[in-house]
Length: 61
Image 1 (cartoon, rainbow, N blue to C red):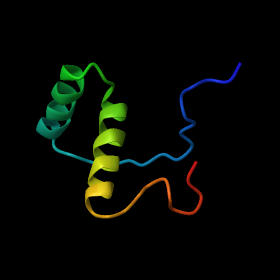
Image 2: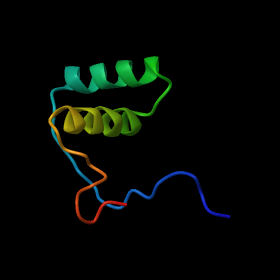
Image 3: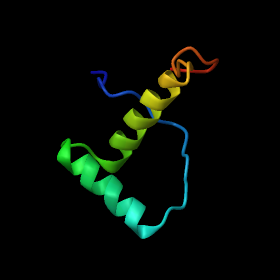
């Protein structure tokens, strides 16, 4: 049985102030999402707002 969840095979790490991480957690929790899911969704929204379709880039799943 195949999972409906996409495969995430690339790790991207950033360093932030603790307050930024806390703000991410608060925003994610308010949407009943994990921090990672919130960051992925937010980044995808920003890329689309900048005219970049993350699914159209070569190598996209």
